[in-house]
Length: 484
Figure 1 (spheres, one colour):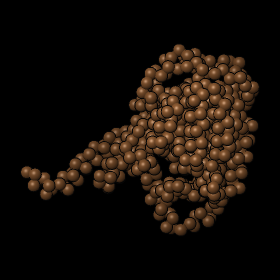
Figure 2 (figure 1 turned 90 degrees about the vertical axis):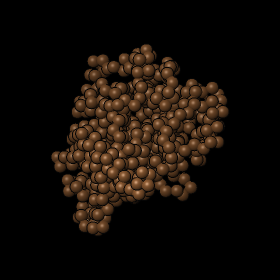
Figure 3 (figure 1 turned 180 degrees about the horizontal axis):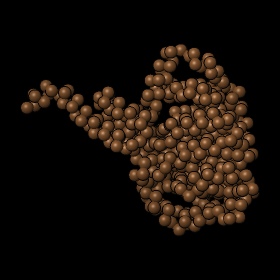
Figure 4 (figure 1 turned 120 degrees about the horizontal axis):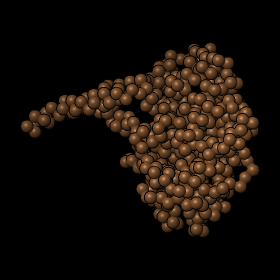
């Protein structure tokens, strides 16, 4: 019997593979999700034995609506309920919004205001930080002045030069009695055993987000925490695209890294804190008791309206993608978009094309150089269609463009962690700040125009004549775009 099995082992394994693959393909089809993504997974399952099945196991599972997090422990605490109630707008505040000429963006505000804890906060000060040099300077200053707490949640924290400098400072603050909590993504971050020991000895509490085996070989494992949040003393918050790593320093002759981050003070800091605590309650696996000192009544004069939008497998809807869609479709004059990964779904692509064809000035800035061969050519595959629709496309040429921003009609801006791709919209945990303010929008436009000076504007006729070999690469990578 054993001899018979070993003699036909290959055929047996192939048979088992296709039995499981057919079952998985049937499950995918029944989901009634995006046809392109469905077809990509089915092709992978049926045409690539074993590897296709492994790919589906690691990347194809759909967890939206299954509630990965236990949120009730945080939501049911009385001080959280009181804090949420304090952010409900009254009629006077709504009338003041009309005076700010936000009526055209009312749909965008309403989209998120009553869902997934994204209230519109009115009392805020917002500072735009360009590149790691500005972000780290301000962050280190604020952490150095911390008296009560420092809460960090990052996709990437490395114990390299800048990471070690931050860790030194955190250990110092912990020694002064400041409460330090760190939530880091297990796959993307890198702590040595020496660093872990230092953190523990300093009394810093740190947890990885959803650990997986062999993280160095699993950089694309699904459901990563791509957020970048810092909250100091419940008064100051940071959110945007900049992780904790030396590549963001633009020092020592390394490749130039262009990114954008925000420093905020005011009511929106409480929302950042709230989402940090939801994740902390999950990763710590403890019944977290919310402290009043984590939510501070802001003493500021700024009146910039800000919403914090989050999305991930545990949210009912793809909130950040929906916010971008509404912002694009409601644009009247112009729309400027920057993203390091441009692999849009059909909805976002059609919204951009329709906006341009209806007379809106649409400019899209993407990398000319990318850290992913497949993502680069998948992005390039969308360019011809956009150019034909009248969209101006620019390739950033100075280095790596990692900023994730959009500005619309001189009133709406967004800065955050979400790329314009399927992974950010549906798989990873992301967070964006939505800002409704003319002065911030003007600064964002100025920053965008500065980036255009370091970019190549694509000429439609020249792009249409690009080599056939490149078109083949684009078409091949476009086929697998929903899986990247």
